[in-house]
Length: 583
Image 1: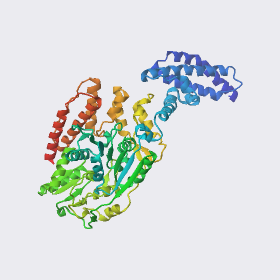
Image 2 (image 1 turned 180 degrees about the vertical axis):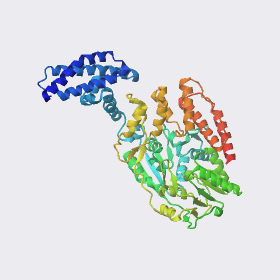
Image 3 (image 1 turned 45 degrees about the vertical axis):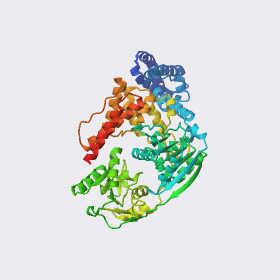
Image 4 (image 1 turned 135 degrees about the vertical axis):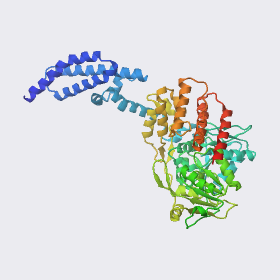
């Protein structure tokens, strides 16, 4: 068959099929419209391939198919709008996207072209290119920063807190609840009435105008005379760094003290300068020198005042059991321990009741202890993604806990199995500079009503920062929570509050407890949440139960539910005492 005859034959075939497809489209139900749309699009593609001036009524048939496709697509879009409670218009979606529409269909163009374009425009309108502009109250103020930067255990935070004590009102922002608790007690002991505000408790002191908080609880709407932000190098942390960045950019305070590692200096200067604020830098050096010991340390070499550092709870408990079996009293510290238990363990070591400390790298942040010698039992750690060697900053943070002014003239650092030269090299090499501060999603994202919150967060995370010295927070945990919340069709403001709750979403037990609370609150409409129950009595069970009680507290507070606050404090005390006994 000649080419012209073949083209005419295929065109006549499509022409004859048109009435049948028109009838089929009219009879197709909503759930099957996507299929008939795809079939019609394919027929239009066939017609475009046959286009020829010699074909009579070609334009009429082609236009007929296009009109039929539009009719089906409009119905498909209407069905989509009804299900998703949206009001997208066919012409606005197809305009400028006609070729993509013919290739992939109305819903595909909506999701991959139209919605991202609208969201990008809304992001541009509602979210400033520069994160500092999200805090207009702070931008109206003239602020001065005092940067206390240097090595661990050099008095940086102590000096900043002296200024805080002299102020009429102020705030201390801590990386850990136990540090917030420690300075809450210190300020009140020094006749500076102070409140304690963390994700797990609120302790209000009569007449208090100062607050000691975890950094996530910073109130950027309140005016403070003096603020102290501890462990400021955490602004570069992918999981929590946004809390430090928010405090730096957003605190309404004319005098802000930043305490932390020297490798944060250049990044902090960039941020402060960009805000138009002033700064002074004071660099700190150790008064008690560190001295490495070349010989490998054996367990039998461990002496009073030594702290062994491992990088897993399992190893810490194993080493602790080893010493206990030999009559050597020891304190234990690791990440899962409740702050109350950490305090008891710290106190036993400080008093000399326990001769040895066995800890993970949780020891590296904040609390100063009378440690004679730090002993690294290993030089690799699992960071959540891979086993890797310790960084110079991590090594210095841990090793720097050895030696304490007024107790030891020298702090010693040793290794148990590996060559001390690795530790020596890490102590000598300059730390990698923090090149970018982490920023989190702004609550302004709730004003963008086009997509579910989960999808908006995903798009936000892929949106490039206009300034090169900021980077996006890892929002995988948020997205996991929002995915679990999807079946409940909650208002975005509630989803936002729930995704911000401080619990380990990677713990199956805690995630299941979270979903149980969601079911009770939003499906069963309970006025109070059921109290978590302890069903087994191992150390891990008690630690998990403690976290469930914390979740009961924070969930109830976030959604403004009535709950038994007194029970929370009492049960946490009982559980902490039991964990301490088991240790």
